[in-house]
Image (cartoon, rainbow, N blue to C red; front, side, top):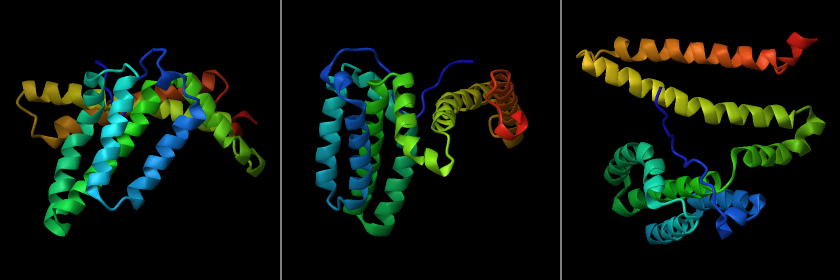
Length: 209
């Protein structure tokens, strides 16, 4: 099955200043962009922030093509959202909403493009460690994030493969020809993942007692 990206850029090895930036600072960048999306009321300010973030991304050496590949899946959704918001609230508000979402996506792509997955997961586990006193398991939480990062591109790839196969048979408008194979493939992938976790002693804690 061919690989597919989903919203965020994959890690690109490098030694740029962006790569060497501490992980906590990159986390703060993503958090700040997420909070700013609720606070910035001017679409021109959002456009300036987006341009700056795109400059930071390109400065990492990841390349414009990778950035466009990361943004491509969300652009159709943003197009529909932008048209609807323009109809409901006017052009400036629609532009602000779309640009703020792009700001969040690009900020998160900077994080994933310049941070190795294992380093990112270790950082997630460290951030979740204060919740250990409430019974949370930071390592299990990081494992969940890792499975999610692996599963989303797999499911997206499964859908694309099934869609191409259905289109070749003239069934691309048949919901059953699209949904059922993807559902079966996804369930099989989930079972294989669960079996692999159980084999490594990472199943449900209640099952191990």
